[in-house]
Length: 497
Image (cartoon, rainbow, N blue to C red):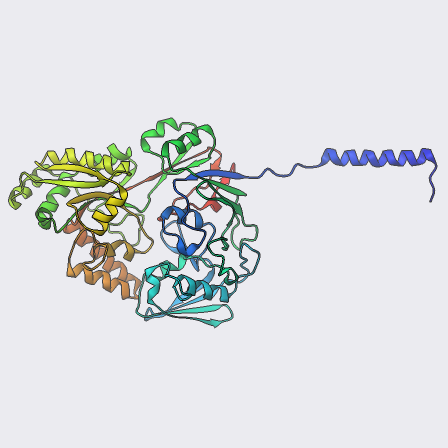
């Protein structure tokens, strides 16, 4: 059809008008929701089986998922495994693998990926096992289209907690150190070593998808620099805020929660004075834990009586309300023949909280006639002399919490290589051993609680507090939650919702 010039011009103008009208109504693309935060040290590796530090796990648990994953109350929830069963004898673990999961490279997850991952993490592919626990695996076998079975050599009630180890694709077997490919709600989209890690929302995630699009994590070792980055608006979230600086954060929200960490004043039970229960009890009675929590943490701490935080609700014993008693402490010291006791406490110099705690306790002990000299040492020295070598009289340190109570309480078992307390008690050892092999959950709880009572009654150490973790966030950020282990769940965070 041919158009005359005027009609043709009108049609062109009309089309142009429609085009302009469309442009006027065109909606802007939604703004990308980005959260910026910091980490004090770089991640250990992109390989989930080479992660050692809690700081690395804190980030990478957003990228890698295990057959099960931790919950905020210290329990476990199904993840890559839809469900699991444990045999009555505690030797066989059968996992039903969830269908419809995709790896970050777009490939579907199947039971062969799970088999490879289990073999890799347990050292059956020629590597060092990711966890010593995995040496107890006797067999790994695919027992159905979506089912895999693990058989242990001996029963171990703690084993299921180690199934949070990440599942990876078998086609990535030769590139685990170069590519972080998991199934989590975030994938690694950028990594500049010692500088920055970028996580991007996984749109194909099988579960509840993240509410934000990206997380930029800057490696910032210096605490003062990190604090200034928050104040200047360079970051939106600052974990591990010093309670003494809260008055500077009036324009931010601050959130606090238990860390499942135990700060303790450890006494070397083989150092002559501390081999006497009366002396250990006297020191416990001389320490004012409430004053330590107030002066060192600004009140942000949960007082303890044993080596387990109340955040481990199911396993932790109830406090009986121990109180400071200076006069009784003096009587016990006199009875034991140590009225003018002198000793040295070694404290890692890179932990201001522990150094400050030592200073407060030293003043408190003076009231009962005890002189405690403070020696600050480098972290590497502390690890070699105190933790490994047991060449010390007393120390103040924090012990990281675990989801598995055995990992917490086995530290005091007589033949445990890292029992730097030098504590020996056959009854205690048997309780921990029995708890580890029983498949009866109620019995396990009973054994662990009885073991904690022994630690408290024997005054093995001065269990001070679970220091609350204080995190500062911009006022428009919501959903930040605390877990009883190192894990920042970025998938639960939202902006302005």
